[in-house]
Length: 332
Length: 247
Ligand SMILES: Nc1ncnc2c1ncn2[C@@H]1O[C@H](COP(=O)(O)OP(=O)(O)OP(=O)(O)O)[C@@H](O)[C@H]1O
Ligand SMILES: [Mg+2]
Image (tube, rainbow over all chains, first blue to last red; front, side, top):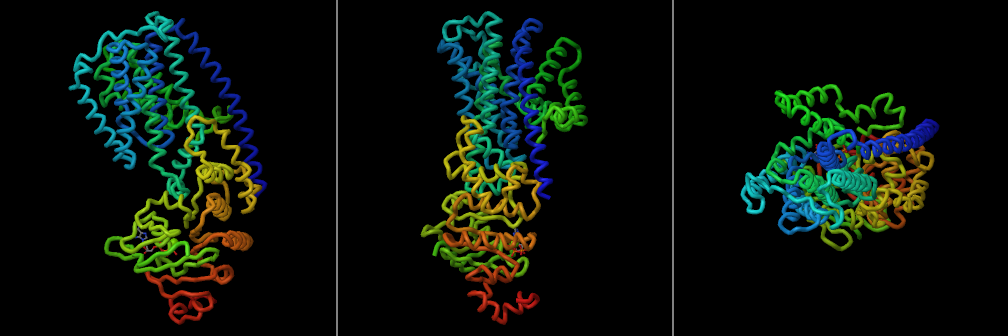
């Protein structure tokens, strides 16, 4: 009995050592690919991809690590796009300050939405976030500074720290890549922190966490605000990439799209949502010029993926024989 | 007296699960709550720890009224419970289970900017607790892989990690082998030297062995109270509960 325990535990530690080596290798390859990517792909496409990948990872921070399915994340993505666009255009601040304004705005919206939604479970949580997001959509439609149907147009990219001209596409790409990496590091640290440990324990057994004295609602709210802020980081950056902020980014379709990306890639894996976002953005990009309606194609892809890869693409890979041999472990 | 309840009642719709229960739990004493299945013992625990809101009555913990206090706050005030169905964090290791319990009392639960390795400074404390309950060999095993009895022991370790003033244990020895029962009895006797313990227990030899005071619950009401000998002699108790067992 105890011997069994012992072998299990050594097997586990051995496995996780392989896992960290594999992770490091994949990380290195991924980084190199991202650095040389603009030589091979259209930079605007890559920047869009990075923004959506970060958005999906921010969303996954909530769904995958606290089990809360928000149907209102467009509020933070699109809201931050408006805030950043407004700040750099009307207040003439530098782009990094503009993005910071977007992040703080999104965090504030997250605090409000989270406050109302966090005590509800499951479908009720999703409904409340959706309802509040729709309210924010109508606010954006009516408000003065968002310019209604037109949105905020010709947003200047400006000079990073007042020095680097971001109108140069290459500079802009590496700026976006930097933002993306910072976002990913923040997410990684957040998950692997003392706070993240409590989140994990709440997901494992909420009653026990309460009986150990944890105010579960506050930890969930913390995760919600962090998720909103990071979605804002993605949205604010996107506004600078495309140089506009419009109603598209705050609509419910956007909230749905990020759910789709996350489910496609794999909930609760750090990099799954990146792949999900990549797939959806690539599909949209190539189908945009074709006769086919994009939504039907993404819908079909989604259905096939859900049926074939129940855990999402990356989730299935982790759970596969190759994935396990490489040392990955899928937790669900 | 550290914990007391007056006129505690709970109804689920028309069904009244707990009726007019008075309880006094004292420091450095082990108090048993016994009674047949469905008597309302777990419900009393849920009421005392505020996992359920009483329909009527009041609860006082260490001099303050906690009748309207939320359950996490009650836990922070020093009243900590275990669950009838063992409650561990299944995918965490034994060590991590104990460390999660230690995080809050050590002010290490809200830092989202620190690395996970910052929790290593809880290891010494955690290892001591793991040692106390005899889980040393399973320290790095995943909780889900433990046997049922070992899970219960782990739950006791996480409960003790909070250094509670009052300990509520719901059938801590259910599903345990004779060896473990002896070991856990000793742990409870030891921890009760400095705290109050209220436990639900079906094993009457354990009750007579380690409990100073016994309350018998039947259909949500108190049937008898006193030390084990007094209660065991009570005719109604023999009839309702002990009659079937060799007391
Ligand atoms: N949430 C609830 N809703 C409705 N009825 C409940 C609820 N919780 C408990 N009950 C009922 O209250 C009664 C007492 O249940 P309780 O779990 O407190 O008994 P117990 O003494 O702990 O029994 P056991 O020895 O089986 O653990 C039972 O009849 C049960 O069905
Ligand atoms: Mg019970």
